[in-house]
Length: 149
Image (cartoon, rainbow, N blue to C red; front, side):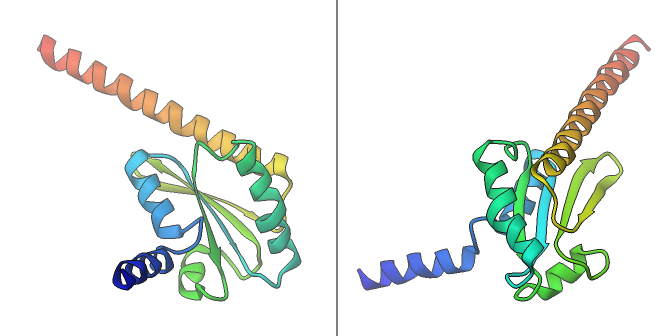
């Protein structure tokens, strides 16, 4: 019994926090959803505002349901944060959306309002949907063109 409990605790520890980057990345890659990442620290006032107020509010309202969301601590996950961030200012809110030619990146630096984050997410979701529709239409045109030859 103790072995099972230890295994469960170990898995929970290894899985990371509630908004784990590896899980969000896998989700974005598998589903095609945009990937939204908040990079910050626990000592930065703007980061704390984003992490404890802005983002939880958007999550509660369902405004982030169309994206895979992760939080990266720039202190404890410094290598990952360094790979994601542009410059050294924090917080950084980074949004990646998948395209036919790779991932496109958008960046907001500093504490942001709910409205600003919501607009960023809505635009990314719309662009993702329009690209998927365009890709689908191209596939249909290509298929009908191939059939008629």
